[in-house]
Length: 418
Image (cartoon, rainbow, N blue to C red):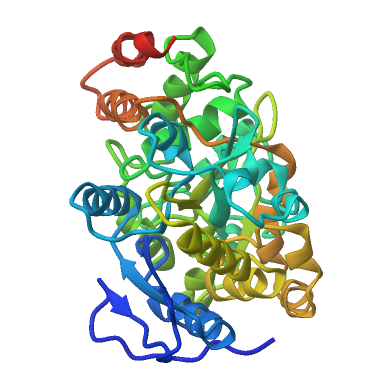
């Protein structure tokens, strides 16, 4: 496998790639760079390799912040008539993009290979396949994993090769690991609180939404019990800080030893590997009723207002970036998972995972994974859930009252779609 080439960047917000004069199709691709650090050089290298192999296509990659920023910028460009043919956006944006008639199903692009559409992990396709068609192709994909400091485990008299496998063990080990200098556990409750909450609810045996984007279960007794459990980790058991835990600074807190365990995206894996001054482990999330994590991350989408030639070129780019070799290289460089079984059969990823087994944890967890929370009116419904979670964790509302309000708002928002 060719190593990634380093390309200097004048700015991390937008990059245009030079192409030969023969290029007769130009693509603009919006791409989210936010999780796990600056990845622009990695994407630069993949696109540069694609252009070398496809001199008739020029790609302008616009790096547009986090997933929400990327959706706003890409859709604003479309609304103002600026060219945009494809983007990597939240996998959970699919319902809204379809409802707004902004994206095209891959089956409706001339020349698409059905075998290619079926080559990805089914759990990663769950958010992209709706009503029998494929609207999103997985690329920057993840599950939530548990990172833990093996040195702090040993210091607390715990087996550093046996992280907690159940909620009861999470509490007991968390208490052993908590002291004046370090908490036992931190679960982020800003940024993507709904994502962490969905993981806990799944482990408690209950989904928070239906699989058709029309119904939420925020006020279900088991879901309320889940949020009360999250509250108890700080308020009753004292193994987590009170209030909220910041998504953006949690990785650094873990690297500095402020917490012995953290739940975070596998997209942080390579950054933790490169920066940890201690031996660390990565584990699947613990179970209560069952094991489980939602998938996460981004999918490729092709915009509907695109010529047939541009759709064909966009398809070639997406096929290239999701090929086993490129998916393997991406996984090694970032920590995000390879999106197909074939990626893990490449010599590069087989060698890497043999040397560094934690790189397999997120992939293995797909066996117990479910689709990430997604509904129609996703952003507004999700904001209501996020606010409920934070209100409960900060003590301003009870879990039952907060989730009841979020459920009432979701019912109002989804009524027209039902």
